[in-house]
Amino acid sequence: MSTVTGERETYFFLSYAHSVPLSEKARPDTDYWVKRFFQDLSAAVAAHPQRNEELATGFFDGSLPAGADLRPLLTAALGAAHVFVPLYSKNYFGNSWATGELDAFRARLADARAPDAEQHIVPVLWSPLDSWDDRAREVAAALAVVEEDAPERADYEQNGLRALCALGPYRTQYGRIVRAVAERVVGVTRDHQLPRSEAPPVITPRATDPRDARLIVAVLTGDKGAGWRPFPTEHELALADYVAAVADRLSMPAAVLDLAGVAEWSPVKPTVLLVDPSFGAQAARAAVEALPRWVVPLVVVGEDQRGAADAETVATTLQDAGLPKVLPARTATEFERTVPILVTEADKQFLRHGPVNPPAGPVTPRPSLRPGTASDDGQGQGDAR
Image: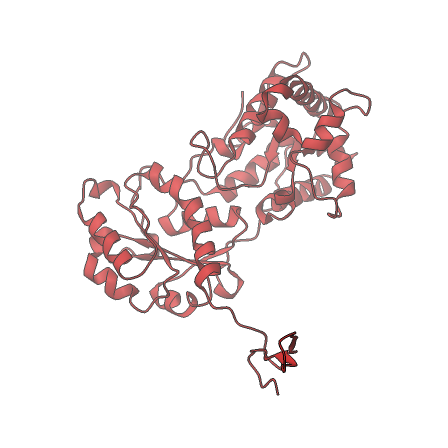
């Protein structure tokens, strides 16, 4: 049995780098194969003959309510787990949320003065790392869950466990590795019990200074402001805070600003604009008139606005104003599935259409083979002559 709140102690905490889902089988911010591995590892731990029935098998944030405030829940779960299972990949080490979980668990081990502390971290090689990545130590630790002479070792090292999980011909090798990980998890918990203790916060609080943010989030609504919650029975977080939390997990620290802040920062940052259809089509068009064309809008129909015809009108009006076309979200589920794609689309729109400023100062002329021309003139923000 797994736990989703950290109320019971657990055998393991599963940590992974979130990505934009490519399948309807996954939650909006989880990988389908991560969920599959969690289920398989939980089953292997539960079936272990030396399993302690008082412990829940594992923690996976994909089981948490989508609109929950994740930071305190993850912090509590990190304090209740005996073993930390990170899924190492190139994206893992570039994801501040994932590495924040690892750092928080290591800090807990240090505070608890746990003997043989590193045994409580059982990494998995989820996908191969580039040969030039300086991660030999981490890769060696992840490979150590499989004996060197085991027949599945070569496939695991070459392809990573995600590929073995996803590809049918490797199901036997995958099953052996899952059982090997479960053996390590149960063995460490049995031989080196870790007292339940408070873990440091998972990651630093969300960016409040737009200079530290990679993404700007704002809402266009009446008097509800940044606290707008169109799905109060399904989402604990305000709409803008939910988008910011998803962006954080995708390694795009986000700042929630008012419209004045958006007018100042959207010219130099990717921006998501959440629109209340009751704001009205013409008022919405007037509000975005001065915003850059790469601002990505999403009209969200709340629980008290079901069936509202205004949503399509507002969305069309924003498109006519030059903003990217995005279909309205009419339910909490539609909104949740749209947000990861919305965040990455905002980044793409900015990279495609945003300002590209050459460095200031003189420019080194580029060589040219055209007759009579020594070089092409460079263009920069300074006098090149």
